[in-house]
Amino acid sequence: MRKKKRKDIKNIIELAENRHPDTVLVTHLISSCINVGNIERAWDLYDLVTQETHIEADAITYTVLMNACAESTPTPEAERAASLYEEMKFLDIMPTEATFNTLIKCYSKRHDYVREALNLLQDMKLHGFVPDIYTYHGLLACCSNVGDIKG
Image (tube, rainbow, N blue to C red):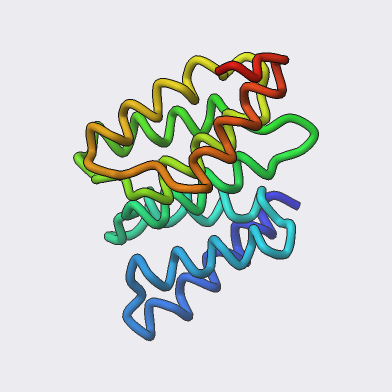
């Protein structure tokens, strides 16, 4: 079954290559996989694209993948999201406000990532972003999940 999925993904890429694929197209394909609940296929597509094409992920691609981590069940994949964030930093890809809010959302679903969520607030400010309603919603959810409504 895994080989069939990989072949399907390669077929999608081949079709896309005839149309000069770029980061935007790949990000939309990954997002579409996530939207229909096929997170595994989204990761397969990301892996294939990054390993076998010239297409590079951007901040939006990484944010979409982090959102997949946040939506993973039964337990959000905070470790994977953190790894994606570290990869972004290593590649000098500037995070967006949405990147920070998505990471905070992911971390807010895990009791063991409260400190990391709060640290992201500082990181966000260092990057020149002003926390918004999504930021505070995630941070409040994070604190309430561990019973610390004082933050």
